[in-house]
Length: 238
Image (cartoon, rainbow, N blue to C red; front, side):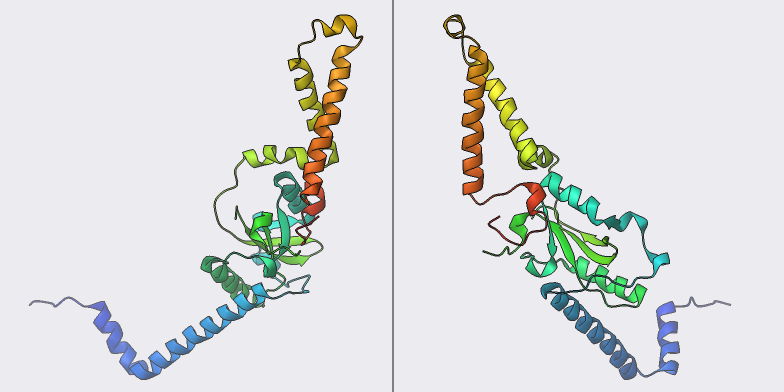
């Protein structure tokens, strides 16, 4: 006796016909897709609209601890790498579909509607008033934020070193002093030191005054400001 093998797809189709008509099933599936599409459009709209939301009610047991960050930790990263932490509505690049999907997934998981989105990114990634590695957050209260999605390329580790001189007034001054010392050491003073007392120190002071003045003039005339001052500012001219 030969036993025919079973085709599970045909079996499933047979069971499905007993359960509901094909038209009814397709109508339900279409409704699900339409509802999901509507919700995704609502999420995109909220990302592009200004929000006053300061807290999102999430289920504590479902939160991942490695995605919870305090405002002070975010501030430190922004200052170290000269980034800004601003509302998503002034982010000028496209929010990836993967981020929208994660927001939708979180809303279903926590049975809530998320709002008050904020993004960490460089100044160029925002429509500032007058795309390095964006991170999308939502506020969860008491200056804590929950990381939803990260995209783009990883930030260059040299960026922290490159922007260190403009981290604050202290690092700006120290950088000017170091450069002045280098300049003073490069200037030959064999004959000068015989006729002028403290020639090396005078050269250093002259170099420091010149370097600090030139850098400060260029920096502030270009409308720039220190990292500690701009990390949450929406304005281009600081």
